Image (cartoon, rainbow, N blue to C red; front, side, top):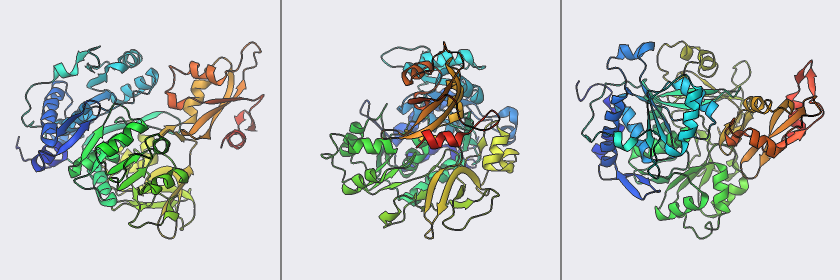
Length: 541
């Protein structure tokens, strides 16, 4: 195979970056203090690519084979905290044409099992603390892939990942790839709470990176503490990949707490920071806040939910240009930016569209609305994802009928339905007003009431239940379970503590209601139909 075949740049990110700036530091592991140059990262990616090839995490050489349904690229699923091996696997799947499909270690075993069935991975890579949950999930799933362990304290449920890596780190000669070939599978949720795997192709990754670089003004000397988990689009597409694209430095850690982020900003002279509002607020309340030197930060963004003005002002008072962003796994996620010299009166907006993003607000019939009117936000960009894997009906509803038809990769020509309500003012600034569905955001994570209600309703003391969001100072929003008890007088409705214990192995922690309200009977809007809006008016807010 020709070393310089068509579109080789699509997959070989680490090789291309290493050829340009081999000695620049691309990655810092704060947990160990290790620093990796781009030459180091490319050598690690080459070793990892050979490992993935042994397990079939590759794409067929022929384009026509890759287009066939029975010749999909192999995938590697990772359950781990943020570690250098995640970066190795991203760059390596680029070289082999395989797909990286990380899953959240926060999910309960039944949730993991459903997603494992959707992904059908060729290989599992699991950090040891999460091995027991994965073993339980595999017992529930219909797949049984081989697994490797990222060891901690020398313990390994499966063969240690490090022992399995080949020694050879010379350039890896993989298949010729095209921009529309898949590279990432990132899970999200639907309005019913059913997780969906969002397929993101190489082209979309590149375009989101270009949109971020051009709209946010990223530079080769940028340094960022990456505080999002790497099973989330925030862990890759918000800053990691755009910063790698420019040759900057990404600092990762197993977990970030506010004091650690403040310390790293000062120690590493960080220039860019993106975090959820909860983290940004906690940083302002930390003992280190007043004494930390923030002068190196020229840009900070809030994402994952609305940021309170008091938090933004705390950052402004320290001389940091903090503004709000907006995105979703299905598109971007970096769709907007604040113009140079933006007016602080626009702080409640997410700014104006990025260079290669179109935005509009439409009514229920799809007609574009005038400035100031509230409707559903639609986006159009070549950084849009391709589809929800294996879900044609939901793909058509979000991405359009052509995406569901399997006629090839998207090129940014179709409008994507976000499901969010927004308005655009006369200056072109976009304000996100709320969600069209019942979904709410807790600590930067999407929570879908229908999924939570199904789990709560399994409690023996619960007859009917509606889950509504309420404001919370720490997490932005949390759920309140409004419960109508069963008729059996011997069955007690659960308290908040009881419900937390009951849901411990059924739902991820961020989905569990923090409060319970018991009512004699839920309001009805028709025969046997609960009036959700009436419940939310009384108990939500």
